Image (tube, rainbow, N blue to C red; front, side, top):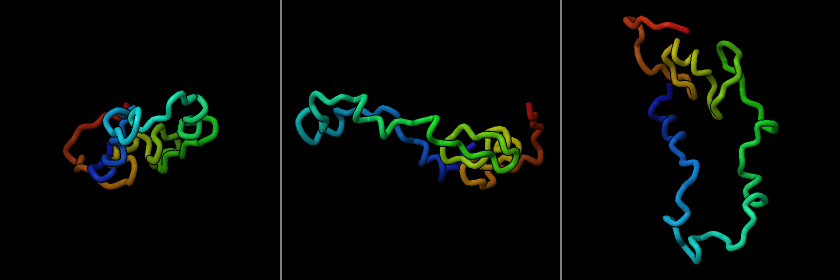
Amino acid sequence: MVCEKCEAKLTKVSAPNPWRTSTGPAGGRKINENKALSSARDRYNPIGTTLAPCRICRQKVHQMGAHYCQACAYKKAICAMCGKKILNTKNYKQSST
């Protein structure tokens, strides 16, 4: 669960259209560029970065920038990224499994 404010942080497209923002020849891309060498610094490295633990249950969080795991965010009805209360769950019958 993510609030509206934090949802803007998640709306990045993983593979944007390179031809849409054409500012120069070939859409702003380099010609004969080796993508394996040039995009290595932008790629996600699971070994180099450590994911933060959940602030409630200390389980590893599977989302970059989140402080709470999905199970705890659902149980407490809070935003997984900022911890803001999203909705009132007083009258809901929620299962934790």
